[in-house]
Amino acid sequence: QVQLVESGGGSMQAGGSLRLSCSISTYDYYTYCSGWFRQVPGKDREAVAILYRRWGDITYADSVAGRFTISQDNAKTTVSLEMNSLKPEDTAMYYCAAGPGNGCITQPNKYNYWGRGTQVTVSS
Image 1 (cartoon, rainbow, N blue to C red):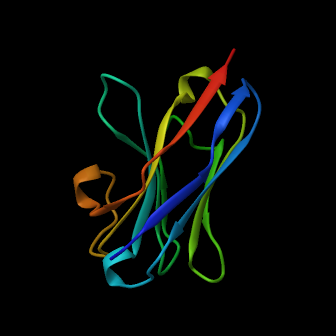
Image 2 (cartoon, one colour):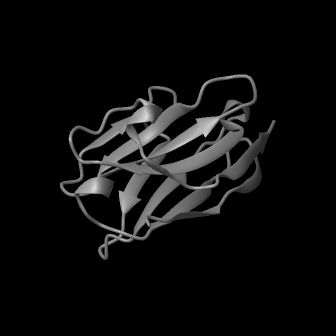
Image 3 (cartoon, rainbow, N blue to C red):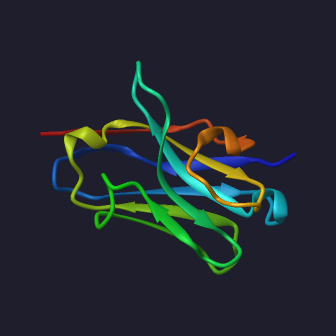
């Protein structure tokens, strides 16, 4: 059973920084694609940053490019999201996800495994 456990998040003023971490219990083909998604009430879940864990290919949403950084630790057990220059529009529930390594796309339905989510709130 693949498990994803998020940590980090919380409240921050605009311009500040937060770091999210996701512990992923397995490193294999079925979890080679990983990513951070976010969702606000009434809207679809959207991809923030996607990482191909095997070779390090990364994709960012236009809205966070240059401000957020996704990374993986050397042990390949944790995928983190460093969020800088936070804006009120970054406020959302953030989810970590993992899925098979046959193309790491941004559509949420590609990802089979999800964490429970962690709330990020940015005040102006």
